[in-house]
Figure (cartoon, rainbow, N blue to C red):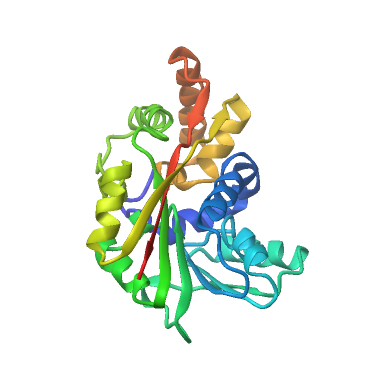
Amino acid sequence: MRSSRSPQTGEVFDAAARDYSAAAALLWDALGEGYVERVRPVSGSRVLDACCGAGASAIPAARAVGPAGQVDAVDLAAGLVELGRRRAAEEHLDQVRFHKADVTNWPAPQPYDLVLCGYGIFFLPDMDTSARRLAGLLGPGGRFSVAAWAKGAMEDFGALLYTSVTTERPSERADPPARRASNRINTEAALADWMISLGLDEVSVHQIVHQVTLTPDNARDLVIGSGFRAMLHDLDDETVARVRDRFLESLTTGGLDHLDATSLVAVGTA
């Protein structure tokens, strides 16, 4: 049914690239726009978008900085990076450059004015060390920002999917590192304290409220076009079909008719 090898983050999101567009229209694009609206990149500034995916925040950031600015968008998932390049080309946004690379080793050609990390900081190895390194790529007065899930967001949806998968096979790890890291910064107070612990000043935290009304079709799209896809890693087609049917039935029996994607955006100054 599956191999014993755990999926790497890059693998999961590279696979999700094939089904990204539907999930983007439901979730990622709205969150990316909301994220950038709250951070407000300055026209002409230099921006790094770490864990950029297909550009949900990099594209609106590129619009904000304008032709005089520059956005480096970096992600490990080659498929998502290629989607981002196509989206930028369609909008003639020459100021954004998408790179398939490990952002934890990204060599900044010169200091950035703003570093963004939307819904990706908890996937990086050693979240604190990775965040400090990213913040270290800023020039004096530069701003570091993350977007993260608020407490309770995505949880009911994820719990039903998890139960549907573990019916087919026992879980090898009930609480993965990314979830543990995410839970450390899932309230406004905890996120603000964490940003201050990185050595940042003038920290502010903002909320994005976003909900998606669920249907059988878009529930499937949200699973396979996001990190939830990791739960299906290496399952064969027949098993995936059984998980899908069980999951969709559980949405109905559990009375879950929406996905809660409430998010927190934190900004601090170096």
